[in-house]
Length: 280
Image (cartoon, rainbow, N blue to C red):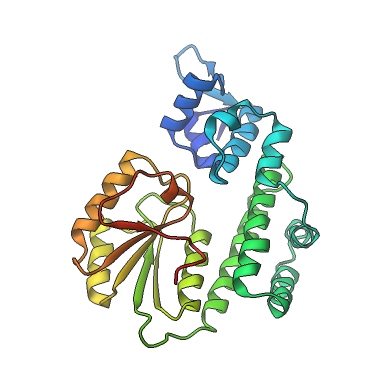
């Protein structure tokens, strides 16, 4: 991945989820990152650039404006991502560091006994992901930690969703992402909310072509297609895809947009923005 200690812009995009356009825009507007220029003219970035860009990407993902993020010191970025210390979140994170998936899963189930599913997702799972992102930027965790965390959370969310059954009159919903989306956990959290609300829930997963989403919606007879959009799924290219998807869907099928990317994308005619965990 590296040329010595230097990274290509492709490496940066892969590691942060940022796009080339966003990184170049930050270079122009905020003076960071400052790439090293090779004799060939290609840009290269340092490991320190990568660490800060990871923090910046997560802070923007949490809803902070890019101009404020760019001006903040690293300590301030960490506070934007994790404004409050939560002992329960730290306990969960300890299990991630120890690669103890069984203990992590068991502790999540214990919290369910005293709190509702929505409180567990909002107050524990989402902050745990933020805690992991800070540790990732600081170099305290590695890919095997990320894979363990994702596997445990995906199993937890799927098993929890199976405890809810469709209710009359709550309709059918198809959950998916747009092509190029890389984040599955937000999609599964949204699916949990729809299932808990009594909807018959169908999850297609990541990176399906728009035509396939439309075909599936028709074949399943759903009344809603809910698209999960992470903060990286925003901008005019995404908006054009949503316009295309709206045209492909049956007229009586609602197009719902959730996730942090939905709030950062200009309004799409015929589409509705929803709160991921409050879909009633």
